[in-house]
Image (cartoon, rainbow, N blue to C red; front, side, top):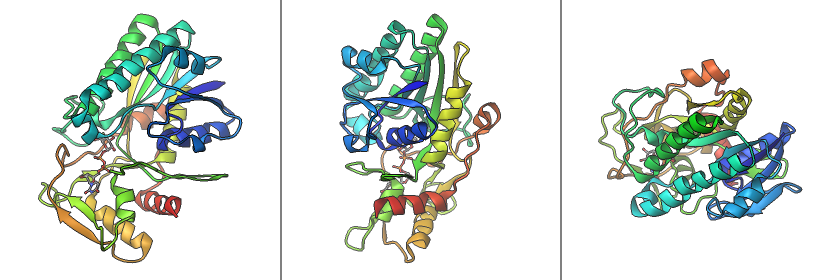
Length: 317
Ligand code: UFG
C-alpha cells in the first residue's frame, strides 16, 4: 500500500511518515516546505516539493497512491486572524484541489487533520463530535469548511474519509536518524515554550484570571505517537463510502500551571514564568470526549503529560 502524506515534512506529518514506514507502508510526500523541513524526508522516499494549490504537482504526488493522509495546511490561530485569505486559499482551496485530483486518479480514501478549533468556545466539556461548531477564528473556520467539503465529497462521489479533530498535540518521536522535533518559527505552543524558558526571557502565562481552579487555561494534550496511531487505525477503518469525525485528545485536561510544574519536574528546577494578560481568542477549557475513537477505532492514548514533556525535552537537546 502507498500513502500520500501531504505536509510530510512538518512536525506531525514527518512523525507519521516515520511510523508508516516502520509498518511497511510505502510513502509519497507532498510539501512546499513553507513551514516544514526537507531534511526530515527519509532516504528513498518519493518527495514532491510542491503546493496543494498546484494541480500538476498534486497529481504527480498522488501517482500510484492508494490513500491520502492530509496534514498540509496553515495552522496558526493568530496568523489566521491577520491573514484570513491566506488560510482560506491554502487550507480550503488546497484541499479542494487535492480532492479533485484524487477523484481523477480514483483514489478514494483520505484521513484529514481537522482540529478542535472547529468547535470554538465550548458550551459543555468534554466536547463530543456532535457538539456545536462555532469556530472563533479563521483557522478553525477553514478546518470546519474542509470537514463539510469532505462530507459532501463522500455523499456525491463515494469517497471513504475520516476527519481527526486534534486537541493539543505534544511530544516527539525518536527515529533511527534522531528526534523528529517540533521546529516551528515562531514557536507558539506551550510545552516547547515552557522548556525553553529562561530567567532573561521567561515563558508568558497567558491569563491567570480564567474561570478554572488555578486561573489558567486548561487543555487536553495528546502525544504525537498516540495521535499517529489513531491515523493508522482510521486508515484501516476506511472502505465504505462515508465520512466519520473523531476527536483525538487524552480525555483529560491540564492547566498551564500544571504543564509548567510537569516541565519543572522533568528539568529538575523551577522553570521561570511570567504571569501575563490573556491571549486573544483562547477558550478557557478544551477537553475532548474521545469515546468515539476508543469504541469505533479501538484507539487508546497511552502516553501521559510527563512522557510528552520529557520526550519534547529530549527532542530539543
Ligand atoms: N500558552 C501560554 N504561553 C505560551 C503559549 C501558550 O500561556 O507561550 C497557553 C495558551 O494561552 C493556551 C495553552 O497555553 O491556554 C495552550 O496553548 P497552545 O498555543 O500550545 O495551544 P492552543 O490550545 O492555543 O492551540 C492548539 C493547536 C491549534 C488548535 C487549538 C484547538 O495548536 O492548532 O489547539 O483549539 F487550533
